[in-house]
Length: 248
Image 1 (cartoon, rainbow, N blue to C red):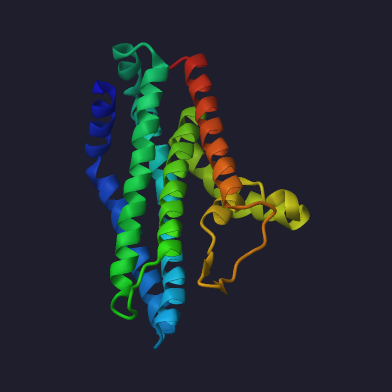
Image 2 (cartoon, one colour):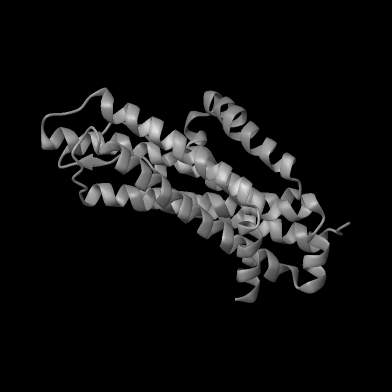
């Protein structure tokens, strides 16, 4: 518990970064939800239910912020050179990394909740919200996705031990590498991290009204399992890397 408290305190002592991430997330959520909800307000309850899907989809923006924050949770100390003192205070490095992984996961959950609340509150200015079971399931999947990608970011930070390097790898992979792979290997691309995440947060159906979405080779449970495997796998590799490498 002391390690968890210490790691949470380290995150809280970087208020400018946290505030910057939170404000950026809120701004994108407000703009996205406002644009989506106001573009086609419906006059029927069923239409509002369908519009709610689109509004909630805006909350998936929280995933990338969770990933970035997960990277920062680990790489802050490598960047500023305080990781040496941390490992000297707690020689069992796996315990330190475990605490950082938990903080990154919880931070992802908090960012997801913040984003969902912001988009829903913003949408109420244009549509009438009537959250149904399917909507709550989508919210749960968004929260799960943010938590897993927060963990993945922390694992990547532990693996590379470079803040800039980890951030560059993330953006190059998701913005360049995955689209190129998808263009050549369509079905194989479904199992890549970004597409797995898209499947996990994909629309469902509202009382028989199917939402537009991509076709995938697997269902939601498989998507959750694969996303979890990616997050845990990268976290495990990051732990091994931290245990094997010397620190300056």
